Length: 181
Image (cartoon, rainbow, N blue to C red; front, side, top):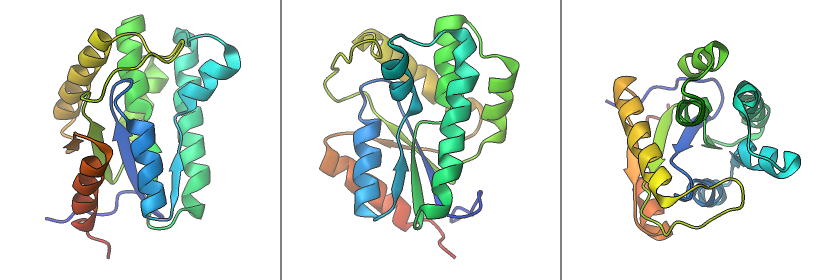
Protein backbone atom coordinates (compact mmCIF):
# COMPACT_ATOMS: atom_id res chain seq x y z
CA UNK A 1 0.00 0.00 0.00
CA UNK A 2 1.40 3.45 -0.86
CA UNK A 3 2.54 5.61 2.03
CA UNK A 4 0.09 8.27 3.17
CA UNK A 5 1.18 11.85 3.83
CA UNK A 6 1.93 12.17 7.56
CA UNK A 7 2.92 15.84 7.73
CA UNK A 8 1.49 18.95 6.06
CA UNK A 9 3.41 20.40 3.14
CA UNK A 10 6.21 18.54 1.45
CA UNK A 11 6.98 14.93 2.21
CA UNK A 12 9.51 14.95 5.04
CA UNK A 13 12.16 12.36 4.39
CA UNK A 14 14.25 11.36 7.42
CA UNK A 15 17.82 10.38 6.64
CA UNK A 16 19.27 8.49 9.59
CA UNK A 17 22.52 6.72 10.20
CA UNK A 18 25.57 6.50 12.34
CA UNK A 19 28.50 8.89 12.07
CA UNK A 20 30.44 8.91 8.82
CA UNK A 21 27.81 6.93 6.93
CA UNK A 22 27.04 9.51 4.25
CA UNK A 23 23.81 11.11 5.55
CA UNK A 24 24.75 14.69 4.72
CA UNK A 25 26.11 13.87 1.29
CA UNK A 26 22.98 11.88 0.46
CA UNK A 27 20.62 14.59 1.73
CA UNK A 28 22.40 17.25 -0.29
CA UNK A 29 22.46 15.11 -3.44
CA UNK A 30 18.77 14.25 -3.12
CA UNK A 31 17.82 17.90 -2.64
CA UNK A 32 19.75 18.79 -5.80
CA UNK A 33 18.15 15.91 -7.73
CA UNK A 34 14.60 16.88 -6.70
CA UNK A 35 15.28 20.64 -6.81
CA UNK A 36 14.20 21.14 -3.24
CA UNK A 37 15.70 21.78 0.18
CA UNK A 38 17.54 19.75 2.74
CA UNK A 39 18.01 20.51 6.42
CA UNK A 40 21.63 20.01 7.49
CA UNK A 41 22.39 18.34 10.80
CA UNK A 42 22.43 21.03 13.49
CA UNK A 43 24.77 18.98 15.68
CA UNK A 44 27.67 19.73 13.32
CA UNK A 45 27.05 23.47 13.63
CA UNK A 46 26.70 23.15 17.41
CA UNK A 47 30.08 21.43 17.73
CA UNK A 48 31.80 23.94 15.42
CA UNK A 49 30.25 26.95 17.18
CA UNK A 50 30.83 25.78 20.75
CA UNK A 51 34.19 24.05 20.04
CA UNK A 52 33.08 21.07 22.12
CA UNK A 53 30.91 18.00 22.04
CA UNK A 54 27.46 18.38 23.55
CA UNK A 55 26.74 17.47 27.13
CA UNK A 56 23.58 15.81 28.38
CA UNK A 57 21.83 19.13 28.98
CA UNK A 58 22.37 20.14 25.33
CA UNK A 59 20.51 17.21 23.78
CA UNK A 60 16.98 18.64 23.86
CA UNK A 61 18.22 21.98 22.53
CA UNK A 62 19.98 20.23 19.64
CA UNK A 63 16.89 18.20 18.72
CA UNK A 64 14.59 21.22 19.12
CA UNK A 65 16.77 23.35 16.87
CA UNK A 66 16.82 20.59 14.25
CA UNK A 67 13.02 20.40 14.31
CA UNK A 68 12.63 24.20 14.19
CA UNK A 69 14.85 24.33 11.13
CA UNK A 70 12.79 21.61 9.45
CA UNK A 71 9.60 23.53 10.18
CA UNK A 72 11.13 26.75 8.81
CA UNK A 73 12.29 25.03 5.60
CA UNK A 74 9.07 23.10 4.93
CA UNK A 75 7.05 25.98 3.39
CA UNK A 76 9.93 26.65 0.97
CA UNK A 77 10.47 23.02 -0.09
CA UNK A 78 9.09 21.52 -3.29
CA UNK A 79 7.67 18.02 -3.03
CA UNK A 80 10.21 16.67 -0.57
CA UNK A 81 12.16 18.03 2.39
CA UNK A 82 15.25 15.94 3.12
CA UNK A 83 16.08 15.94 6.83
CA UNK A 84 19.67 15.08 7.70
CA UNK A 85 18.87 13.40 11.02
CA UNK A 86 15.93 13.60 13.42
CA UNK A 87 15.36 13.76 17.18
CA UNK A 88 15.49 9.95 17.21
CA UNK A 89 19.21 10.00 16.40
CA UNK A 90 19.78 12.55 19.17
CA UNK A 91 17.99 10.21 21.58
CA UNK A 92 20.05 7.23 20.45
CA UNK A 93 23.29 9.11 21.00
CA UNK A 94 21.96 10.28 24.39
CA UNK A 95 21.57 6.63 25.39
CA UNK A 96 25.12 5.86 24.31
CA UNK A 97 26.80 8.79 26.02
CA UNK A 98 24.49 9.64 28.93
CA UNK A 99 22.66 6.31 29.53
CA UNK A 100 19.29 7.91 28.79
CA UNK A 101 17.39 10.55 26.89
CA UNK A 102 15.55 13.05 29.07
CA UNK A 103 11.74 13.11 29.15
CA UNK A 104 11.28 16.09 26.77
CA UNK A 105 13.57 14.46 24.17
CA UNK A 106 11.73 11.15 24.50
CA UNK A 107 8.42 12.94 24.01
CA UNK A 108 9.77 14.72 20.94
CA UNK A 109 10.91 11.44 19.37
CA UNK A 110 7.43 9.98 19.86
CA UNK A 111 5.64 13.06 18.51
CA UNK A 112 7.80 13.74 15.46
CA UNK A 113 6.83 11.74 12.39
CA UNK A 114 8.27 11.53 8.90
CA UNK A 115 6.75 10.38 5.65
CA UNK A 116 9.65 8.12 4.77
CA UNK A 117 12.81 6.99 6.54
CA UNK A 118 16.14 6.22 4.91
CA UNK A 119 18.99 4.59 6.83
CA UNK A 120 22.52 4.91 5.49
CA UNK A 121 24.60 1.76 5.89
CA UNK A 122 27.98 2.15 7.56
CA UNK A 123 29.75 0.72 4.50
CA UNK A 124 31.61 3.86 3.42
CA UNK A 125 35.16 4.36 4.67
CA UNK A 126 35.11 5.79 8.19
CA UNK A 127 36.79 9.17 8.37
CA UNK A 128 37.61 11.17 11.49
CA UNK A 129 35.94 14.56 11.78
CA UNK A 130 37.41 16.41 14.72
CA UNK A 131 35.23 16.28 17.79
CA UNK A 132 32.20 14.81 16.08
CA UNK A 133 33.29 11.28 15.19
CA UNK A 134 34.54 8.70 17.61
CA UNK A 135 35.47 5.41 15.91
CA UNK A 136 34.52 2.73 13.42
CA UNK A 137 33.44 0.52 16.33
CA UNK A 138 31.09 3.21 17.69
CA UNK A 139 29.67 3.77 14.21
CA UNK A 140 28.74 0.07 13.98
CA UNK A 141 27.22 0.01 17.47
CA UNK A 142 25.09 3.08 16.73
CA UNK A 143 23.95 1.56 13.43
CA UNK A 144 22.83 -1.63 15.17
CA UNK A 145 21.02 0.34 17.87
CA UNK A 146 19.29 2.48 15.24
CA UNK A 147 17.97 -0.60 13.43
CA UNK A 148 16.74 -2.07 16.75
CA UNK A 149 15.02 1.19 17.66
CA UNK A 150 13.29 1.49 14.28
CA UNK A 151 12.08 -2.10 14.60
CA UNK A 152 10.80 -1.54 18.15
CA UNK A 153 8.92 1.57 17.03
CA UNK A 154 7.60 -0.22 13.92
CA UNK A 155 9.03 2.49 11.67
CA UNK A 156 9.56 1.15 8.15
CA UNK A 157 12.80 2.22 6.50
CA UNK A 158 14.92 1.81 3.42
CA UNK A 159 18.51 0.74 4.12
CA UNK A 160 20.75 2.20 1.41
CA UNK A 161 24.27 1.04 0.77
CA UNK A 162 27.08 1.27 -1.70
CA UNK A 163 28.46 4.29 -3.47
CA UNK A 164 26.49 7.50 -4.06
CA UNK A 165 25.06 6.53 -7.48
CA UNK A 166 23.82 3.23 -6.03
CA UNK A 167 22.31 4.96 -2.98
CA UNK A 168 20.64 7.55 -5.18
CA UNK A 169 19.06 4.89 -7.42
CA UNK A 170 17.76 3.00 -4.36
CA UNK A 171 16.16 6.13 -2.93
CA UNK A 172 14.76 7.35 -6.25
CA UNK A 173 13.01 4.01 -6.80
CA UNK A 174 11.50 4.13 -3.31
CA UNK A 175 10.38 7.76 -3.60
CA UNK A 176 8.76 7.07 -6.96
CA UNK A 177 6.57 4.49 -5.23
CA UNK A 178 5.23 6.97 -2.67
CA UNK A 179 1.62 8.02 -3.15
CA UNK A 180 1.86 11.66 -4.24
CA UNK A 181 -1.87 12.36 -4.39
